[in-house]
Every structure is written in C-alpha cells, then in structure tokens.
Image (cartoon, rainbow, N blue to C red; front, side, top):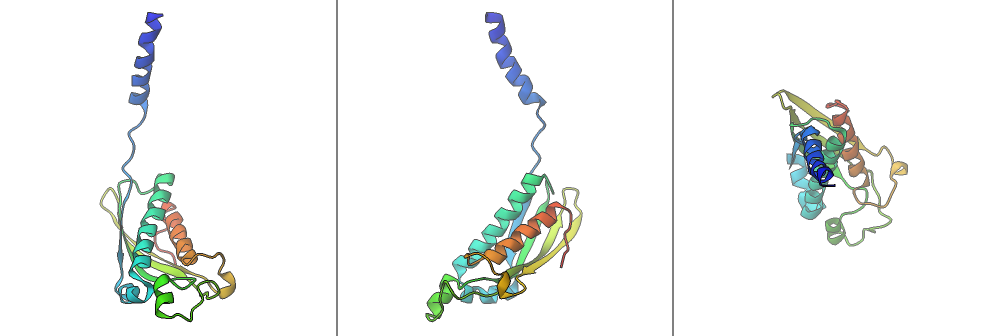
Length: 164
C-alpha cells in the first residue's frame, strides 16, 4: 500500500508539468471618442461608463474563449452610442418620455487599433445599428449596442478587424 501512496503525488506533479502554459490574455482598453464625450451629459455618465466596461467584458471573454489575439493590446474607441430606450438621465431630463414604450434605433460605432504580440499594428473599425424600429427587439436600454459589441468581438476573434 505504501508504494502506491508514493505514486499519487508523483502523478499530480507530472500532470501539472505536462499541461501547457496558459497564454497571456489580450489587454483591452476602451476610451470615449470626442463625439461621444459631448453626448455623455445627455446619455448619463453612469450609463456611458457602464457601456465602456461592458464592451471590454464582451470582447475579452470572447477572445479568451476562442483563444484569439493572445498577448495583444487592443485599444478601442467608442465613437458613438445610441440606446434603444431612454437612459435614466434622459428620463430625468425629459419627464414626458416613457421608459417602456419609447423606443429608438440603437447601436454603436467602435474604432481603434490592435497591437499584436509581435508588434504589428492593425486598425479596427466596426459599427452596427438597427435598420428600423421593427428590428428593435428586447427590453434592454442598450440591446443593440450590446449586439454590436458581440458582433465586433466575434469579428476580432475571426480576424476581421475592419468591417462596415
């Protein structure tokens, strides 16, 4: 029995040594473009900063899940952002808006650069907006912006950096 007890820790050490080292996940930075900065007061600082954080999360999780752009630095600029429903700040500023029934065409425009692990700099451009009010589905304020983030993330993982 004692001979077998020696093999259990040895097996664990060998299993850990045999696993490949985890690749470095991409670093993602998001800033606001000058046009969007002028709209922050209208949309609300909280909502805009949450959207910048959401963009980082969606892109990073997609790239990690797909093992894409490992070790890269991705600098994204959120240049435009349109909600599907009024933001909290818009409801405060215009009490006549209905937070449930007021809908609009939403989406986002994102630009930036990718600096790959080997130092190559690649441009990024993507935008997506609903084409009509009939396309507005769901009840989220940022439903279409979130769809734009997810589509951008998939495009980046697939190597399509500039799409319009």
